[in-house]
Amino acid sequence: MERTLIIAEAGVNHNGDINNAIKLIDVAVEAGVDFIKFQTFKAEKLVSKEAKKAEYQIQNTGSEEDSQFSMLKKLELSIHDHETLINYCHEKGVQFFSTAFDLDSLQYLSDIGLELVKIPSGEITNLPYLRKAARLFSKVILSTGMSTMDDISAAVNVLKAEGITDITILHCNTEYPTPMEDVNLRAMLAIKEQFQTEVGYSDHTLGIEVPVAAVALGATVIEKHFTLDKTMSGPDHAASLEPVELIRMVAAIRNIELAMKGDGLKVPSQSELKNIAVARKSIVAARSIKEGELLSEDNLTVKRPGSGISPMCWDEIIGKIAIRNFEEDDLIEI
Image 1: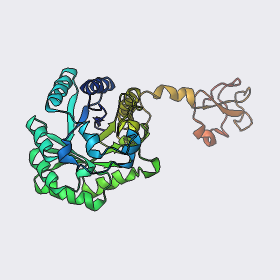
Image 2: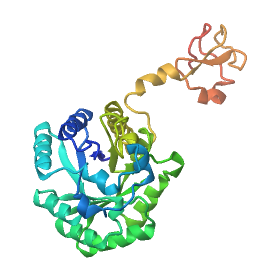
Image 3: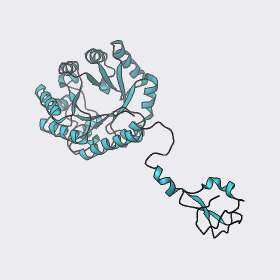
Image 4: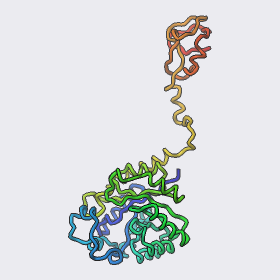
C-alpha cells in the first residue's frame, strides 16, 4: 500500500489572524501531515453581498445577522499573509497548499508555483473555474460534496478535455459535521470503479474513525479540518479536529498503511512463528502408558506445547502400539 497523502485543512480556522495561522502550521508539523491547506479567496469574487449563511455557519458563528460576505471578508488572507505562511511552511518542512475559490485566486496560486490544485465541492459545477484550473495546473484533486455521479462525470470531462490526466477524486459530504449515517463511504469505491482514478476522502464527521476506515478501503488522499480549539467562533471549528486528535488520526492512518501491506497470502508472519509451539497443542499421554500398550482415546489427550505430533494426526495415532513407556503429559512418539 502506498503512503496516503494527508492534507490538514486549516481552511479559515485562523479566523483572519496570521498568528493563529502560524500556530496551525506548527500543529500540522507536529502531527506529521504532508500538506497544510488554507483557503485563498476575495469575498467580492466569491459571494454576493446579500447571500445568506449556511445553517451550520449560523450555528457555529452564533449569528445569522451577518451575511456570508461579511463573514468571509473577515477571514481573507492577504497576499502578504500568503507569503508569510508559505515561507514559514518551507522553514518548518511542511508543504503549503490552498484552495482557490475564484478565478483570480486560481491565477495567484499558479503564479506562486503550485502545480497541484484542489477544486472544492462548491465549484464542481463551475465551468469557467474548472477550465481555468485545468489550464493552470498539472494535477487536480476534486472534491465531490453535494454531487451526483453525473456532476462528477461532467467535471471530469471538462478537466480531461483540457488535457488533465492526473485526477484524484475525493468522496465528500459537505454537512458540518456530517452525520455518520450520511457518510456513505462505499460511494468512494463506486467513484473509483466508474472513473478509474485515484480516490480519497474529505471528511467532515466528528472524530477520526471514518478517514481511517477510508484508508483501509483504499483512499490515497485524506483531507480533514483541524483547529486550535473547537470552541472558537467561526464556521468550521466545531467540525474540526483539535491538535491531539490530528496527531492521533495521522498515527492511526500510518498504522493502517502498515497493516494493509502484504501480498494477501495467508501464511504465518515472521513475528508469530515463534508462538506456534507455545499456542498450539500436541498429542500427549493422559496417564502412564507402558511400552507395547495400545494407544487409545482412554490414554491419550491433547495439550500444549505444540512441539510434538499435531492433534490433526489423532486418527492416525489411535490404534498404534506404544514404542516405549510414557509418563503423564509426555509427548507421544511413534
